Each structure stands twice: as C-alpha cells, then as structure tokens.
Amino acid sequence: MVWPFTSASGQGGNNGEDKKDDVLPRQPVSWTDSLNGTDWQHYKDPRNWVPTLLVTTTILASLQIYRSYLRRIPGATHIQPNFFRKRSLFGRVTSVGDGDNFHLYHTPGGRLAGWGWLRRVPVKRVELKNKTIPIRIAGVDAPEGAHFGRAAQPFSTDALAWLSNYILGRRVRAKIYKRDQYDRVVATVFVRRFLFRRDVGLEMLKRGLATTYEARTGAEFGGLEKKYKAAEAEAKAKKRGMWSGKPELFESPREYKIRMNLEDSQTNNVKS
Image (tube, rainbow, N blue to C red; front, side, top):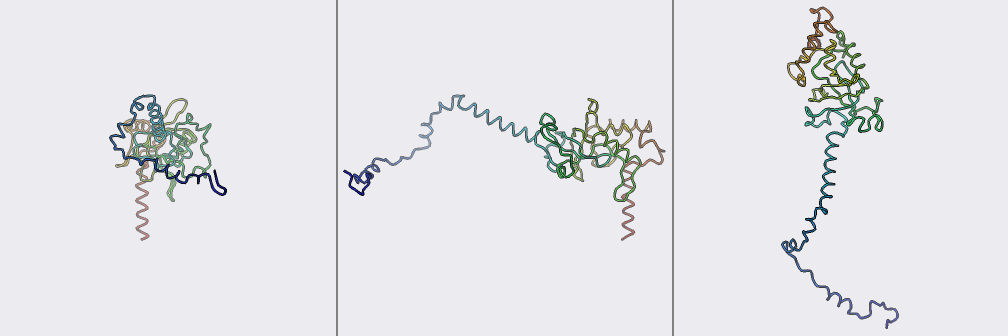
C-alpha cells in the first residue's frame, strides 16, 4: 500500500540499490579481441562500400574539375603558377588599352557553362573593376600611343582602332605563358572570325600594324617566332602599314621607347 504524501518509487526502499547491484562493471576489451569480434563479412560485400566509394570519388573529381576548368579567375594575380604554359583562358574582351594589350573577363566553360544566357558578363566599368585580366599579346609590339606627354608614334591610332574593331566585345581564347613586370598576362590570343580561328598577333603583323617583339630578354613567342618573323618580312616587303614610309625614317616601337627613355633621362639630369 502506498502511504499518502509518498511516491511509488519510495516503495521498497532497497529497489534502487538492488538495480545498481544488478549492473555489472564493464570489463576492458583488448584491441585484438575487438578486431576479432568485428563482423568483417559485412565490409567484404561490395554492395556495402562501392556506393560510398563512387560518391566520394565523384565529389572529389567534380571539385578538381571545377578548380581547374570552371572556377572564374578575377585577375592576373589569381592565376596559379602551374597554369602557365599548360592552360588557356576563355573570356570576353571588355576593353582595349593599346595596340597590343586589352582586358579579358574570364568566362570559364563559355556558353556551355551558361555565360551569355544564364550568367551575365558585366559591361559597366564600375562592375568590371578588379574583375578582369590584363592581357599582353605575345610576340608583337604595336606602335606606342601618346603617354605621359610623349608624342604618339605613326600608326598607333590605326593599330588601336584595328584591334578594337577585331576583338572588343568578342570571345577570345588566350594561351597564357607568364606575367610580365606590369602584372599583365603574356599570351597568344585567338578569336573566331567568320568561323575561322585567327591568331590576333599574327594578323597584326600581316597588316603592318606591329613588329615582332625585339627585347633582348623576356621575349615570348610561344613557339611561333619563325612564323611571326615571316609575316613581318612579308608586310615589310609589301610596304603595309608601318612599313609604308621611307625606310630611313622608320622607327620601331622598341627604338621609340629607347629614345623616349633617353630623352627623359637627359631631361631629369638637366633639372637636377
């Protein structure tokens, strides 16, 4: 009988102690006994581990593909060193700064990845800030425009106008080689024109709108130097573009830069 003001659990005051006595202390089990006691037959059945292996492998492979081919690169400093000379960048040309360089908005995967119909390429300068890659066309040197109070070279505006018309707003593929001292990515650039893939640098040389790069060190042609030299020689022989004037008055972009640097140095010496 349960007395008033008492709980049923209080009935038989030794029940709690009896239960404690019924619980035996856990005995330590050795590592060997634990392994021997494991049902390994469960793990030998492929149906229990193959699906997990496939899912894990698929996830890891997808991450690697994304990092290598589908991850958008916002700037030159974000390009991994092992990408140079092994990978190319596909994107849209958002601006042309000079006769041999421009800015590229990287669109990995192109239209198959939704660029242009699911994913929008920015067009406003504010939206593009710090989101494009500066590209320097490999193997060529276009006439210098007016910079820092310096006079422009002949045909500099022609080269700029031609390059803008040829690639601005278009999708191009840049085979990248390295970063130069100005943090631009040096690359051979290809663009589709009337279903044909064109080498932009080579087309400039054919039209006499650039010379082959003449620097003693740091010149990069991507294995195309002989082809570029031949195109330059043909343009020169046919007096196209830069080569249309008198030979004795011709000044290459490199010669122009050397002369300008010398004049600046002399001016600074006079001031000091």
